[in-house]
Length: 174
Image (cartoon, rainbow, N blue to C red; front, side, top):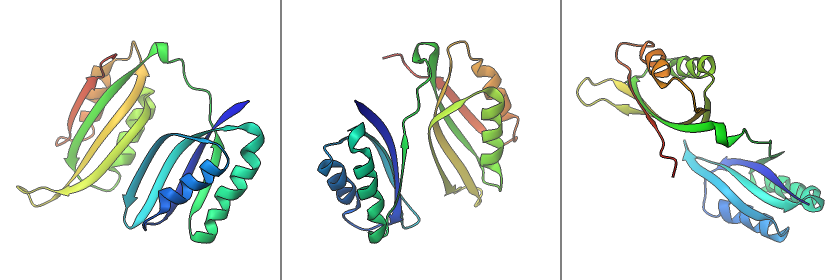
């Protein structure tokens, strides 16, 4: 029987890191499925799912962890059961405001209070050309129930700061 594993990897960025991971996965006849990779502050960070025969997992895990000899820290977790997608919808969030310590903490507190699950999140701090300050910019894909009150989320996020701009949109069902 096959299992899906969630693999995370992080190390100082350099050429060949994805190839190192893919070689180990291929050697164990596993299938590389979903992935998201990024370069942040000189580090390579990746998360991916691997579909593999459960009998091979111990050997795959051993070989992936052996990548630490080449400076890569790898963790493996078995995939968790997913939420009933039939009762869920995706909301796209774009958020911009003046950067300040704790802004992501405040936003994440709203997510928890509203029962929002973050599917993906990208953030950055950019220079505001007009004011000369730094702006916090976030884009997220959020999962909520079909009967979720989007206006309540909008109000809660906008209530965090007078300068916070929030745009929410329900994703198409296609």
